[in-house]
Length: 403
Image 1 (tube, rainbow, N blue to C red):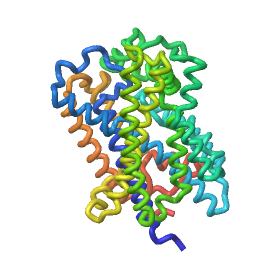
Image 2 (spheres, helix red, strand yellow):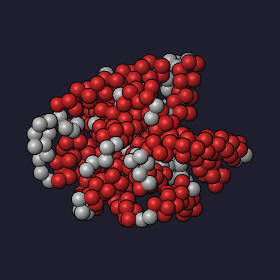
Image 3 (cartoon, helix red, strand yellow):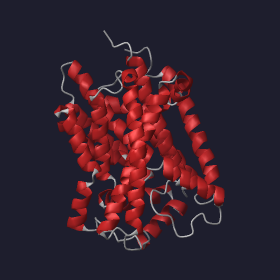
Image 4 (cartoon, rainbow, N blue to C red):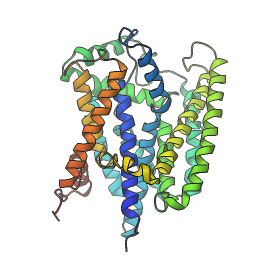
């Protein structure tokens, strides 16, 4: 017999995923899908003090945190898939590996439009999750802590320093980056594809691997999501609300302490900050703890609010958006790059941040209502359905009522 709370649990996870994706969309639209440094003086003649305040709020509360939340949910989904297969006395490991290979293909196509694609990174890291499925939950959390302590980051720094990988020049401002900005701002779609297929992919991997990168932290978030699945956080959330509330208070304390440590280290480090000194790397580590704590605070707050009757309906609004997260993530990039890049409307650098926030909200709302309508007629989003068909190597029921 199905657990009676299963439907509500699934809706809660879908709503959380949609909420995370909304935050990702807000960041990407306000960054105008550059996924990298802008030229000096970019937007200075357009943005005023209110726009700068908005940029600060987005950086403080959203940037990096909702991506981290999205990564946690990837690890949680892996845990749920493996658990579901285990109930059927099946092994999902090889199929999950194949599923990751398909995600790499989907992600690389997305990469052609937007060099900040994260699906290729997820696909690269996903196979390393498989052995952890059988690891006891306390060890999963302990190994995640190793990544969050940034031991891999320090290892890379001591072995490689802050030198660029893949033959790229050091620093954010260089001729290659200038050529990239020209391609996205005035070039054709073919120009953008050519940039993102090669240089864009190299810059992304360079960013992920350098000391200020996110590759190792992303896997730590995967493991954290796997751990949440192992402790069955979403199976009986009601009984865990008190613990979640206490955890949030501890995370608030961790946020304050980490922020203070980050400020102290950077203020006493050699200037300018270029991550060539061990103190810069240490300061970045404390900054990442700020991101980690804020991500945990957002996660706990979402769960606590979701279990209040006055909030549940509002947060459930994001559930259709989350159920079609893959389709919506890629579609929002295509729409966004069309709005800003030269192959489309070419509006990059022409819209102040406050209006960009409005555009992002409108995009999220439209996609959410479209997802709700779509899921009334179809079992899955279009890309979710194709991914599922590829995973099982046979056509899956698509329309509701099909068997």
